[in-house]
Image (tube, rainbow, N blue to C red; front, side, top):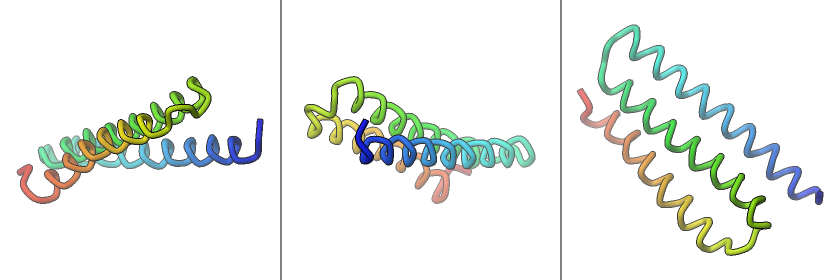
Length: 93
């Protein structure tokens, strides 16, 4: 395995861990306050984490081939996650 691949895996794990931490914090806030915006926020972060994990897994599964499709799908799914995050901040309650 090349150093860049190891770096990619490490950064992906860190990204997933921090994202899941944010999901946990948003869920805890939802349970404490029952605010719908916190539930929507946790869904948005969950989608973002899923996109990151799926992209990393797919990249190695397909040996980093067809990267344009891989990145396009990642950006599409990430955009949906960010839309949930934006909605949670601007109008979920």
